Length: 148
Image 1 (tube, rainbow, N blue to C red):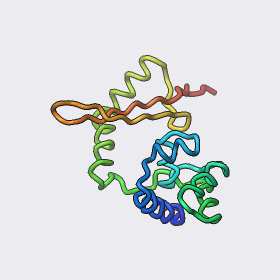
Image 2: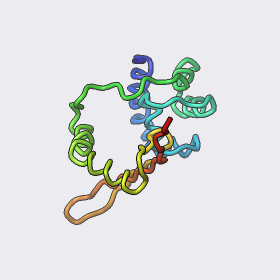
Image 3: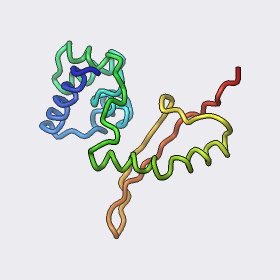
Image 4: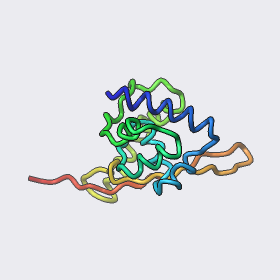
């Protein structure tokens, strides 16, 4: 696990809050999606130097911190099951619906998986009179299992 990435993520959150920035603001300025930009800043992605330099300029990060954004991360490092209530709900979705998602994807596409590498995600707020809803759209490339 890379503590430098974790520490940098905490610093970025503080700077982002102090500057009143949103993930979309940062993403637009470096030409990437809000999801990817947030994942980068939270230590789960690696940046190309020009993206890291762009974020460094916006956030006032030094050269070493920009270089840390370019390092390959140790992805997915967290306690299982997750203890944060919001993250746990995603874990719960996989526990409850995972077998159904698997069955339905494989019925449609065959024997394979949905990529989390060649992947896009959008998050939207949907107004609802009973309370606003979170809409998450995930799109991953289908990868067939190879027979050899």
